Amino acid sequence: MPAAVTATGPGSAWSPPLGGEPVVTRPFQRPPGPYAAGHRGVDLGSSAEGPVLAAGDGVVVFAGMVAGRPVVSVDHPGGLRTTYEPVDPSVAAGQRVARGSPIGALSPGHPGCPRDACLHWGLRRGDTYLDPLALLHGGRVRLLPGGASRRRRGRAPCAAGTGSSSAAAGAAAW
Figure 1 (tube, rainbow, N blue to C red):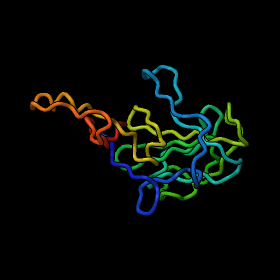
Figure 2 (cartoon, one colour; figure 1 turned 30 degrees about the vertical axis):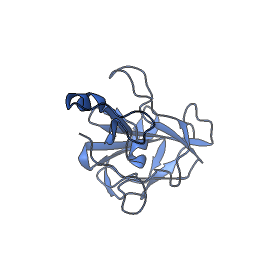
Figure 3 (cartoon, helix red, strand yellow; figure 1 turned 180 degrees about the horizontal axis):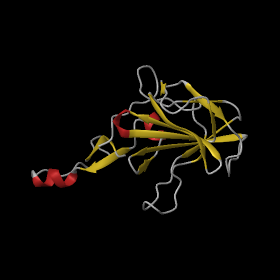
């Protein structure tokens, strides 16, 4: 079960890794299987050499090169790990970071980036990749069917447009 997430703002656990409102140049695309193609994070447009910030409190578990690109990975409570690339790190493995603290500078050269520079921001729990924007927006809302349980109790489902809903909302689906 995912850890509770809250939207950004005072008292929240997460904030955008580039500060301000994120400019998404390529969204998360969940792969259909563990080895299938997909986009296992989001690309956020920005300016080269700008600061990259820790999205939440945690411990840096990696800061170095992967496949010729500089990467920083941070472990967070609840089994979450965020990754940031290409980032020229200003932190080292084992270092504690606080939400909003600088972890490096954004490097140019992310393939397919339509801006001066793009940050590829990833999130996973164990081996499962998740949409990191869910951290900022409290997760996706999943509508659960309610009509079947109402019929079992002898009640008809609510009619559309009556102001009532036959679905429950609010569960984080990731």
